[in-house]
Length: 108
Image 1 (cartoon, rainbow, N blue to C red):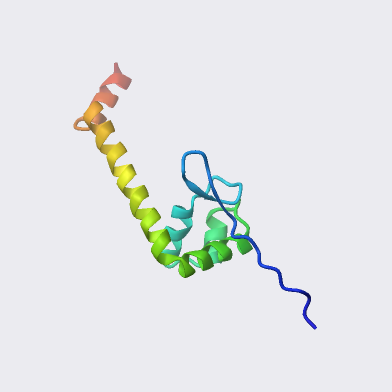
Image 2: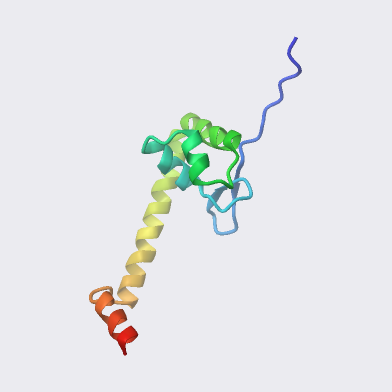
């Protein structure tokens, strides 16, 4: 006879900046989903991110598969916000010729 089966919480936490992270690690939901999308197995993700528990990776992948629409929308918002920050930074700090400027500064 099986013991009482209790649901396990999904190990996803939203930090104060609104970024969804896996458990108490710094690894983001974005990172796990991106690895999974490129064909990485849960075991491969665990090797790449040793702070993650294998069971947590499976739970996050399961959550993604069951809530794909919501997760995809969250990822789209994150990508849009990242593009806005990148554009803002490029407007403030011209990226053209950055390598040459850094080398010139180093060689002083």
